[in-house]
Amino acid sequence: MIFEEAPLRGAFTISLDKRGDDRGFFSRAYCTQEFESQGLKPVGIQCNLASNYLKGTLRGLHYQVAPAAEAKFFRCIRGANYHVIVDMRSDSPTYLQHYGIELSADNRLGLYVPELFAHGYQALTDSSEAFYMVSEYYTPGCERGLRYDDPALNIRWPLPVTTISDKDTAWPLLPGLPIL
Image (tube, rainbow, N blue to C red; front, side):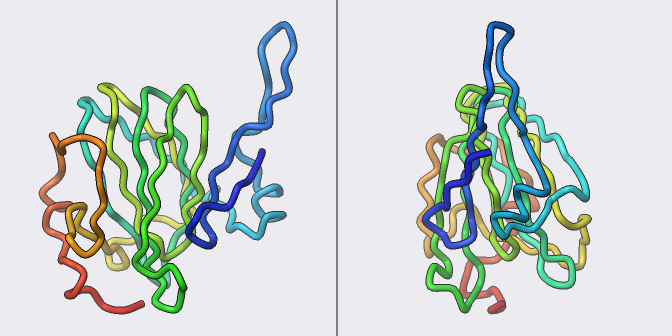
């Protein structure tokens, strides 16, 4: 695994370190030991698969607070998705800044999302699938979210939003959020 720190401190893009021959290649997709060697929180508590029927579908932006703050690790295993993270740590030099990256079945990149980072993504293709691992179980009382269209964040999603949940459109705008 090849770790490259993203512009927001603590977040990483992770490339495959391929070992190939005439049969194809082998690579670790996730390794707790390698994550720990980079100072990252292991994310092996639960694995999830999210399917998106139509391009333009948007999920997020979600995060959890203590005592269930969670780190996440995403890969796109079918099609392509545009992932965005927002630093919600009020003591961070990148507080409320965001970073976006395309993850696809073709580029095979992974995205490590640290605790107290909001995360969301938009399907860039029909029938895309995201596989992700988390460090904590879903805890409804600790769940928080940001509006994908919050003017204070000014996130430029690549496509018009075609499908989004009522829950994700109901998150408050930033001035209404508590400071973490």
